[in-house]
Amino acid sequence: MLNVVRSFRPLVFALTLATVGCHAQPPAGGKLSPELERRVEILIRSKTNLPPSYDIVIGQRTHSDVPGYDEITVLFSAEGKTSKPMTFLLSTDGKTLAQFSKFDISKDPKSLVSEAGRPARGGPANAPVVIVGFDDLECPFCARMHAQLFPALLDRYKDQVRIVYRDFPLDQHPWAIRAAVDANCLAAQSEPGYWNLVDHIHEHLADIGGTEKTLAKANEMLDTLTRDEGKRQKVNEQALNQCIEKQDDTAVKASIREGSELGVDATPALFINGERIDGAVPIEYVYRMIDRALIAAGQTPPPPVAVPAAPQNAVPAPGGSTPPAKPAGGK
Image (cartoon, rainbow, N blue to C red; front, top):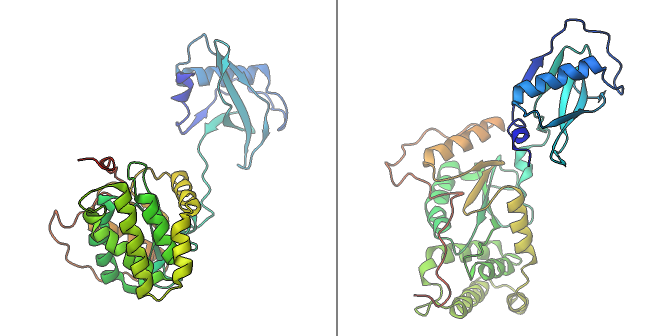
C-alpha cells in the first residue's frame, strides 16, 4: 500500500524551506500555521513525486531530542487507506525540514548476541573477542567451516578468542533438532564432552543414519554417540539418559527465535563481537574483523600470517543457505 510513500522512507535529507514571508513560529506543541503547513506539504510532494490523489495530513509540533528542532508527523492517504506516521524534524525557526534515521549505539555490540549458559572453547570468559556461531549439526556447510575455520582461529589467536555455538537447526534437516538436544544434554554435565560430540558429528556427518539413511537410525546413532561420550566423561549416566529420553527442545527453539530476531535465516552464521559475517568470505577477511575487534578492545592482534591460496582460504558459506536435505529414507 502507498508504494510512492514507501520509496520515500529510506531517504536521509535536510531540506531548506523557502523563507520569503516567514513569520514567527508557535512553540512546540502548537499547530503549524496554514502558510508553513503548505510549504511543508509542497516540498514533500515535490521530493516524492506524490500523485495529486494522495492527501497529506501534517500533525502538530512536538518536542524532539535534537537541539533546534521540533518533531512533526506526516500521514499519507489515498483510496481510503492511510500510511503509518512518518516523523520529520522542523527547525524551530521554521526554515528547515529534515528526516534521518537514529540508531542506538549505547550498547556494546558484543552483548547483543548472548553466549550465556553455552559451552565455550578457546579463551576465558573475559576474552576480548567472542565468536558466536549459529550452528546446525546436520548442515554440511557448518561441518566444513567447523573443520577449517575454527582450528585456524584458535591457532592464530589462542586465548584472545572465545568460541560459542548457539543452536539453529533448520527445518529441512530431519535429525538436526535431536542432535542439538542430545549435545545440550551432555553439555549440562560436561563442556569437553559437548565439544567432543559436536566435533564428531560434524566430522562424520555423512555416516549419521547408517547405510539405511533413515531418521530412526540417525536418532539411534545420535543417542548412542551421546551416551558413549558421557561414559568417557564420567557423567551421571542416569541423568544423561533421562535427558536424552525426554527430548525437551525448549532451549533449542528459544535459540532459533533469538537467531531469527538477529536476522539469521541460514547456517552457519557468525557474530564476531556482535559483527555479523554473511556469505562465503576469504579467511583473511575474518582475520581483519577479529583484528579490528581486538584493537577496539585495546588489545594487540597477532603478527600477520601467510594466507593459503584459494580455494583453501575461503570460509565455507557462513550465513549462506544450505541445500535442502533428502527426506528421511530417500535415495
